[in-house]
Image (tube, rainbow, N blue to C red; front, side, top):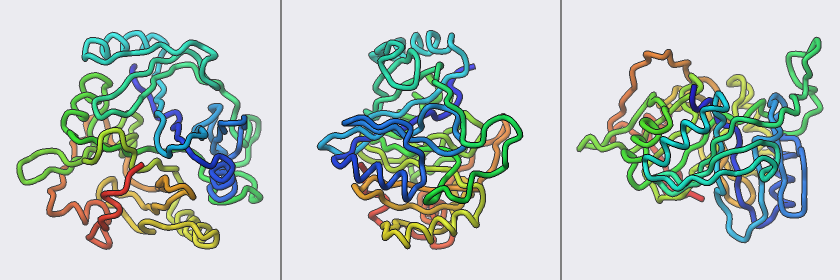
Length: 303
């Protein structure tokens, strides 16, 4: 019971046409619905209505992010825990948000808007449920990831944010980075038995570092790099490997400057998996294991 998985990420863009073209033609997501000021997209193996919402706004950045809960009663139980913590919780009525039923929205300690929802409109994946093929058609454009995987947000007080996600929302820490005084510089948290569903790293409150899509293997990461280079997309880091999570990765920017990632590999933490700790002097190797160094742009650029 409780929080189940990441459902969708909602971002702002000052050029909706350009952003929609990039995420559909280069990333290879399907446009589910397009209105005058908003577009909804999803990956080929996702059942929900959408996993990414693009909203026109003069400011670029994160609107909110949404996690699904396991049972309808979880919304009520978590609402009480959030209010006891001191969060102002707003109920969102069924039909107010496209593709989902009733939800609750609140501001987390680091300033981002988070949403919890149980009922999501199920529109099905591209393969269907009767004698499906094991892979999508080769005619899909772009990178074509099967699903949204995780996101990373920033917090000025990582320890405070970690305590909130642990004590109020029931997340479990898989890895952390500590400074010389044992203060947390970064934490990786999960609910879906993956290396992380969300990570929190030291930075300005309210900011998002990136959101990431899953790929099935390292060869798909290599192919993604070819597609990005062919389309002139600015690659930030990679292809390379993380020490933290053990995953393989590429980071890159969409045309308006939002950082994306494609990710594969990692481990499946058992329920009694002990958290891994990295020290600040090894943070470079933890983030980029092959290079053992982190560019300042990677640490300091947020949206």
